Length: 310
Ligand code: AHR
Image (cartoon, rainbow, N blue to C red; front, side, top):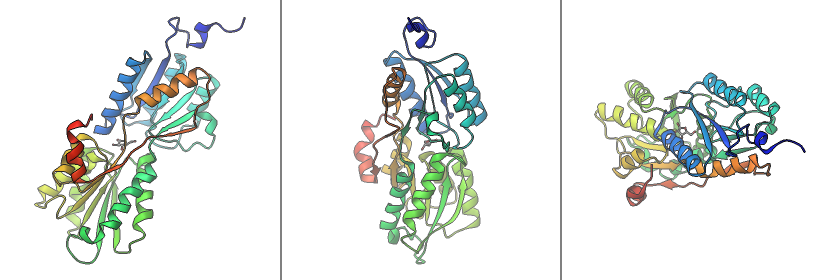
């Protein structure tokens, strides 16, 4: 007796797992690689993927998740645009008995029973790696030789876990050196254009900038355009630290226009599909699954660039 198998697989009769995935958008090279990894792995693993792009809007993600609940998918995964405001929709998924896997970014919900697992990077550690590098290279990074290392920060999307955590980890580490100071900090929304515009305005109001710390490669690449347009040399007159290590970032690093990149791995598809199969089968999974990542200098970028997948 009991429920039929067909019912426990989202009402499908083909026995395939159906996953609803609510993506942030297509704001960066990282995101494009992440989407590709998820779509390709789902296909390879025979998982029926319903994919939506929220174009950076939380309301669109919530709407997508509600529609996945209505369609009775077997599992919902999403990468939350911002950390706050998810409790209601996650409670709806829980009430419908649909397991949720957070992918890439965290939510601030206190009730951790609202999701089965959180797969992704430790963004605080990424910020710390950026800060450690600057502390170690402080003397070199004082490009105008005035005894102070003035840093401008290009923040990711306001309220997003990677923006909050990368700022926090960085601030903690640079506190060790009183010559380093973040003199301006503004969001560039994780986009190339955002990074370019914010950097243009920073350059107009301050000619003592030694370092740019950009929360992702795309904003760093936008900053490079602004710095060059202002007649300065990126990587020399102004040092640049970024996060992600996508191909365009790694290319700029190998050319010396970026000085250091902290890796953030977007290839989450295989681990996500693995977790999805387990939670649909009712298996226990780790509440936190971390991705492994490192850092790159220009020399290291030259070595790995040819084999870079994304
Ligand atoms: O959540 C991961 C971040 O989102 C990436 O570092 C950034 O490039 C993306 O837009």
